[in-house]
Length: 593
Image (cartoon, rainbow, N blue to C red; front, side):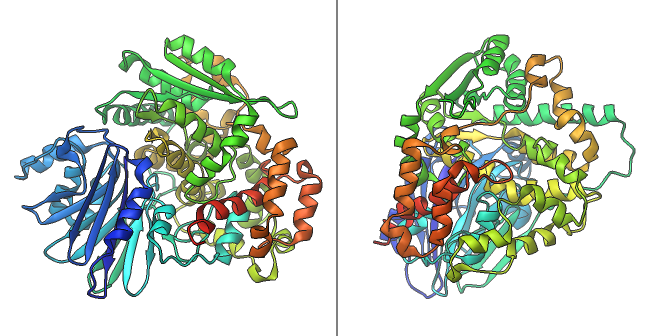
């Protein structure tokens, strides 16, 4: 797990090493253990390392294989690296390190761009071929690891975060009107390749990019999710047995690929509790971590009742943290500075504050993110399923944060666009390879939306503290299995039935049968007191008014009664507006002032 960046010139100039050092320096939190650089003609790499596998200097990056004329920068973990290494040794390759990074180099030499199909894990990497002067970029199937880039006729720059690209300079920071529409409709999600900023794009999950030194570009998709039923008939028990086998294998992969201790972020919900149950017998002393906040408006802000129960059941070394709302408000600017894109989900800040504490005990944790999308756990899925109308109508009525008419009421004419998000969602739902409406919905969520919501915030907020978070529920083999399963089986008993069945008899029934909880920070939902005043200050600031993004009448309406304006999934519309403006002031305005 690391931070990567690089520059490739197309105009016969040398890369700007000062800019590369600024970019690499901006990634220091993602990789506190080592800093390295590499250059060859038109190409230069920067790298910050978080040492997880092969802790020796042999695995430092950029990694250069002089015999194969290849150089690599890599962020992530390859869970099947030992098996691939054994296969490559049989093919005649020799190794100078013990980790997964060198395996990628050899795999690329052996299988070319198709090597990505052999990799099981989370990854974003770049390989430079010194002989052919070509650059190869790749991102994992579910987009667990980020890869942003900025491209013009003279150069390509890429990095693990937009902040690193901004530190390099020369980025077009105008706001993208299409991305803004998506951001305010899809809970802050801007699907790849767009970002809020016109000059920064991101490589979509399951894609590769190849560049020649003259600027020729080829982008390829190497994996797609099939959401159709298998030809073979499966009974309910067959499906449950398969989930049990594949989930156990995924958890074991995620646990073993580390030369440091591994812990679990234990919320007290089904998903994280199930991870603890599956790990407990394989770890001598398992560290678990929970966080809670002050209640607001009578809404409970911790799940300690259940996390304590699981910790006691499995005798974990449990760490429990309670934070006052005053501390949350004080730390919000730090959390926003670490958001690669604006993230209105309340638990982004919770993950940031939890990550700070967890990182003092372990360097790797498992987290339960993705289980709800993969196995149908959210309350809106059955509502959509029962809805009438076109697929778009059924989806939008229970998912969109605001309808297009409200968007036009909110934004100034400068950023008015047609209903581009509805058009995009309709196109995605209509893609072939999904048998039922909910197959379409879950595939969209897992492959296009999840990556820029729970997956992105977990990466951002843990890596801000040099902490690697792993997400076994989006192991691609488990995702492929779940996608082929009938949606009715996933939605049985209130959702996530296969996981509940696997958990039965392994973790306490009270955790399995409880109502679904979330990772709440209610002070960001029920905006009152100091939180309201801070948002008022942000939205009435000279920077916000001068930006000309929001209609003042809409801002005043939300400020007058914030708790009356919640999205369909119970998000604060006021927080959403304030967060975007705050993110721009912290991450963009300060760089370009």
